[in-house]
Amino acid sequence: MGLFTPDEARAELARLRPVLDELVAVRADMVELSAALTPGGQPSPLGGLAERKAAEARLDELMTSVQQTGAELKGVAPLLVDFPATLDGVPVLLCWLEGESELGWYHRLDLGFAGRRRLP
Image (cartoon, rainbow, N blue to C red; front, side, top):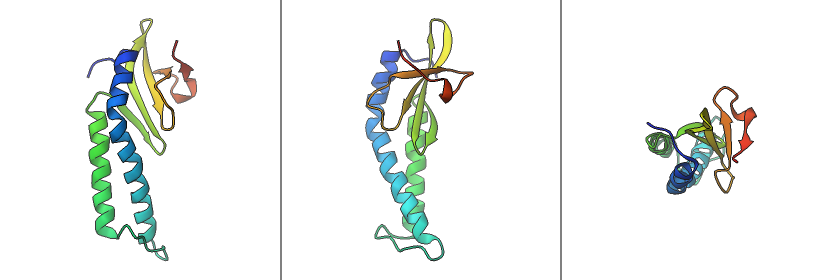
């Protein structure tokens, strides 16, 4: 996949929002179902093993659909989505973290999340 401009990444993030929202909901269901299946776990109104397997399969589908856009899903809890780009000729990742209202951060490839800076 190619590189994104900041505007293209913002448009792709907007298009992905329903997928990311569903990913958050399915993630929560899967955690609850997994806890219910542990010895001594509290039963869940969501169901049991079959429902947990279905949630896991749906989570995999959603994660794959994010990756197929060319974006990189770097974290699931919390969601962290990176969009490969260049700024002033330097390879960077435009970075969105679950809970952020917009795509407003980037970091150099070699610095990772700790090197995040506001987009100019």
